[in-house]
Image (tube, rainbow, N blue to C red; front, side):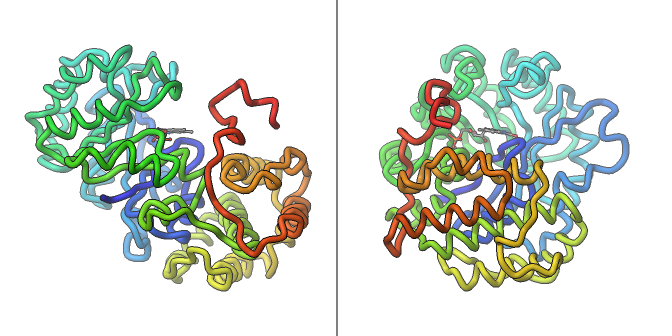
Length: 381
Ligand SMILES: Cc1cc2nc3c(=O)[nH]c(=O)nc-3n(C[C@H](O)[C@H](O)[C@H](O)COP(=O)(O)O)c2cc1C
């Protein structure tokens, strides 16, 4: 079984993808969608969408580019260029947002099987076999729609089909329907990848192990909540880190985000110079060495010296907000998210680590600490 990092718009940008490559044990990663239209992008694909394509020789694990389009021509215009950099391009047929739905893209492609058929047929005849994969939901309103959508996909030699076991109507509510994923993987003759609600190895064992026809799954929110989840899934054991790993890995995440925001070309240079040549896992010295490489750009050697502008600090808080739901409850502290600077955050985390008082900090998702996508728990912030 291969485990990938799911595409997540607004979250899994280059800096986060690099960070997951450093943590290790992830088999592949997906970019968030690039929304293309008849006229955009006019010439070049924006550099920050898929830099890994041009840096493939220094990027350890494959990164799959994803495109969202309402018309085949728009997809083809961009896919043509991406196919110079990666063997296939993923077509987004899953995004539930009203904006893209109204524009005829994302999950709207699942609304009319004939339109989906025409779309895929055009892509396949222009691009050839195995040059396109599809990421889809189980339907618009009900998973009963899935069989007719699978019938559309069956004749085509797609690279793979990823099924998130929810309808558009369900958005992120309820549970991902893994029976529907199993139906897809039994019906289609191409590899099927499952998606939805894997937050631990025990979820994996319960939901996926019974599906013998599945070769891969992707993890989205579960990886943000517990960034070491790929280690847990591969070993079957819950993971723990120590306070120094927490400090240096969070510092590295912040430094990656800052450098991406301030000087993306400098980040590309660091990648070319071997930034991702090691897997840091839960080794504090290796994390420190990665931090040192990035921190040299500003002449800083400690995470506490990083000065993050509000936008970057906001991103780090967003990621910490996910992450804290897998840490012991003392780390949940709402006050941390209200601190005004990154050094203040780091100092407070060090104090909490001391207060925690154990060498090892277990990483285990706790739904009671998890309010994301569940408005009833927002009071916790
Ligand atoms: C914030 C966020 C952004 C997402 N953006 C994308 C995207 O750009 N493309 C895509 O195919 N799926 C996107 N998804 C869906 C995920 O890839 C995944 O299928 C879904 O979250 C279910 O998996 P999970 O329970 O492991 O999170 C997004 C999900 C979230 C939570």
